[in-house]
Image (cartoon, rainbow, N blue to C red):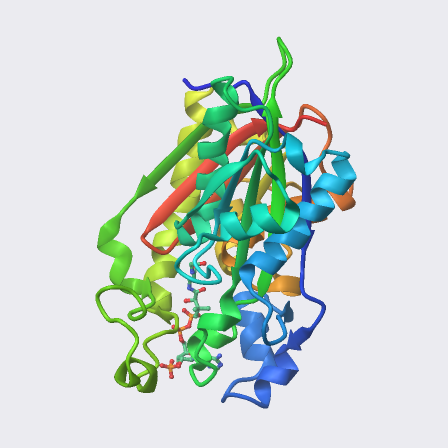
Length: 331
Ligand code: UT7
């Protein structure tokens, strides 16, 4: 089983200051605060002002991380940005962040795995650190979901928010445990249930694609919900079992925040009480690649993460993509 000598040594986040509440949405689409909260658990979400893009959120999260860790930008070897809302197709968001922060030695790239993006990016970066070729990797999950929402579609526009989180990945000391194991899989048969139809090579931007709102999120919510609930239970069980653990050993589950009902069903089926599951969707909505690092900051601020705690990061998203990481919290 992969035990990677790589660990998370810091985490920070950036949320744009402006809030969009359920009450605000009531004035925009045919919905109610009660429906949104009862069906999703969301009260409010942070949203960007015009002109603010994923690279800006990513840069702010990473800048704060480097400041807190007292790491110079020149020490960063690699930047991986998970996003489905890059500022533009190219250059990559990683290049924009690298330039903003002046991480002169770093290489990097963007990774597209929707809501599982942060977990995938963390696994990829950890391989380079574990291999010994990289000493400090920045992994960022950043999305400006409001840039791809149709604010006339009540079924999707109430679900998402904007935000970013960043972690630093460094080598473990001899004998120290870091990332214990991971599981990732994709199931492309689910691609038709959550996607953005236009803007790529299949449907390049045209008046027609804009008129038909094809540059926005399309989702069959019930299909995604069923898949998510099933996989969010199967994958943790698999990872725990093959590492000789049970759910009792897990100090904290940090799940992707897509729907409070998905998280509660997952926790219930795994036998995890509320104190062992991070649930913060009420404050931020679904920030796609941002949810897990944002949730880690909340957990740290609330004193819910201590050195050597067994922690699982878990996500299911568009694709379908599934990703989970089992780790020992390192500080
Ligand atoms: O992070 C990426 C992965 N994404 C997910 O994991 C999302 C998974 N899916 C979900 O979280 C849920 O399916 C939703 C929150 C998206 C929807 O909840 P639901 O309980 O599955 O609702 P539904 O789509 O079955 O719709 C139920 C009813 C419908 O009305 P009818 O057909 O029963 O008359 C919808 O038109 O609720 C209606 N509805 C709304 N009503 C008020 C849908 N959106 C709204 C709304 N306000 N915003």
